[in-house]
Image 1: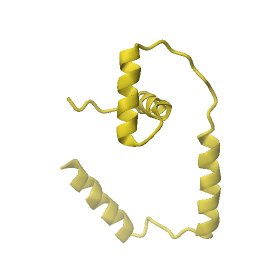
Image 2: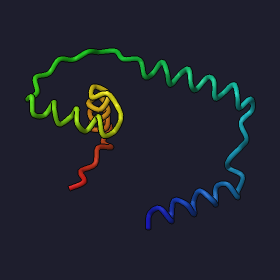
Image 3: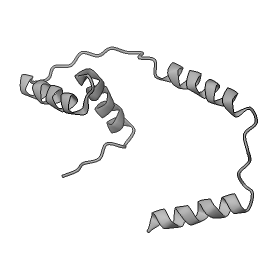
Image 4: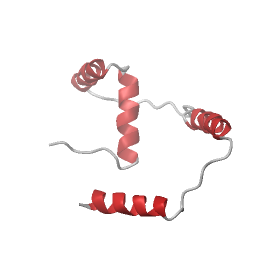
Length: 89
């Protein structure tokens, strides 16, 4: 139900003119892409000990997702620290 409320608020904000067109949209897109690339720079390398069984399971999951297992691990850690990792059980 909360989604419906948010959607109604968004529609109302558009209809009341709260949203404005962006000048130089293409340049803004380029600038934002550059900023995103700079933000995504890998700053740290970490070493952890993890069981062989867990590494093999991570590699299997990564193969299923079509990504390198290190990328999957980094994604899981990022989702955890940002609070967006969801328990599906």
